[in-house]
Amino acid sequence: MYPVRKALPYHGNPHLARNHSADIPDTENCSVFVKNLSPTLDTNQLLSLIRGVGKVWNTSIQPPNDRYPICGAKVTFCYVRSKRRMFLRVWAGDLDVAGCFPTIVPNRIKVPAQGAAVSRVVRVTGPADIVKQDKILEFLASRFFFDPD
Image 1 (cartoon, one colour):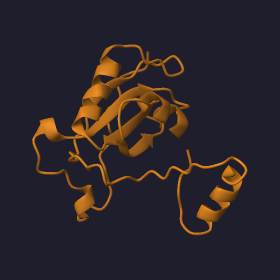
Image 2: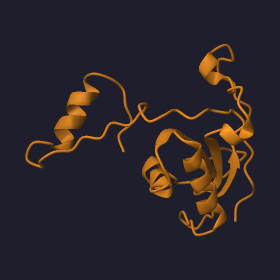
Image 3: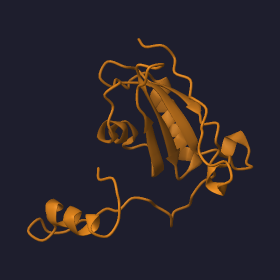
C-alpha cells in the first residue's frame, strides 16, 4: 500500500469566487477527496469507481509527483446523498483500482448541492448509423475545449 496522500496547497487565484469554500455545514458538502489511487489512474477508471453512486458535477485527478507516488482525485457530486453513497462504497473496502484500495475524506473546499437542472456532462444517444463517436467528437472539438470520456 502507498503512503497516505495529503493535498498540496492550492496556488490558484484566491480572488475567484469559485475557488472559495462555500459557507455551508460539513453535512451539506458534496465534494470529496479520494486518496490512494493507482499512479496510472485515468478519467475512465475514476468514473468507473463512481458509476452507480450518483450524478457527478466535476472531477479532477491529481497525478503522482516527486512527493506522492500515487494519484488522488477530487470528486464533486450534485447531491449530498451521492457523496454518502461514495463514502459507503469506499468504506466497504470492495474498490480495487489496479491493486490500490482507496480511502476518502470530505474535500476541504466545500461545494453545495448543484440540483437536478445542472450538469457538466453531455450524453449523446441515437441510432448507431447516425450517432458516430468520431463525427461527434470532431464537431464538438471545433467549437469548444472538452475532455471526452
